[in-house]
Image (cartoon, rainbow, N blue to C red; front, side):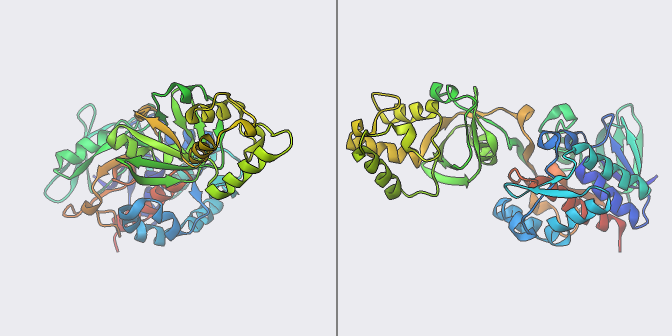
Length: 409
């Protein structure tokens, strides 16, 4: 019999296992793939954005209202600054980057994965690779794990964190949702999150490769703004990507189609833009639109703006832009409407939204209510945050609480 079994050797599982083992428990991790931390290795362009510069409360608030309430105890127990301290102690110093990001100073995701695995093994954790769990069931006093091939293992406590359904090539194929459903636990249907969006508009595809760094994305559903995020946006041959679009993608995944409104100049009011355009129209020689707009946007983007406004030329002199077209141009600059008709799916998603309902889990311990000894955390929870190290932060913090609780008083 295994005292404490951890299902999944990702960020959450490795962290929780080390915490539990350091408290004196016998811990064994079961990982179905041939290596630990596969998604860690692929994250952040193989650099691994492992947490955030934000404080615990600020970071939790980015998980929307229900997520923020749930994560309060976890982010209090292990705030982002403590995560950085722990990694420094593990030999992985970190550095700050723009957009509140934290990376290993080496810029190597492998260093993060290796440190987590090394820490777990040093604490006494046994790691079994190629061990594919196929089911979990409650016995009279313990929990029983079933494996491919027919083997079973019993344990006093089961820490279940095999990942969600995003990026299935890493081994996260959504197995855990079935196990939880078989235990009659409430599951919110999983959908891809932090995923690029597809657009049916040819003019969007024509902007492939253009990135806009300073815009604010607002997502409208049925005419109502449901999410906004000030982050870069990248136009692609399929639609739109980049943090700005991906951070609001969960809402598109849930409804299937929506409209993104891109404010290209969130720091400038409509009146300020209007004054700039009027001044250019009156100036000697009347400069062309691309020269007038702040940041001198790429000509292809200027042409697309003109197309939306109905300008006769892709880059006209300002003196040739009629007053009514100038008004439409200002509205477009403050809310370029980008139609989207879906996401690129789980294969391209960084995380999964949906999963075990948060009300079914004690946020102070990650133990499933009414299931003594069963702890669920990581992507199996109905919990997802934006790009910027937030989801790793949640994995570590929830793993901290689960590891402590499973070890007992």
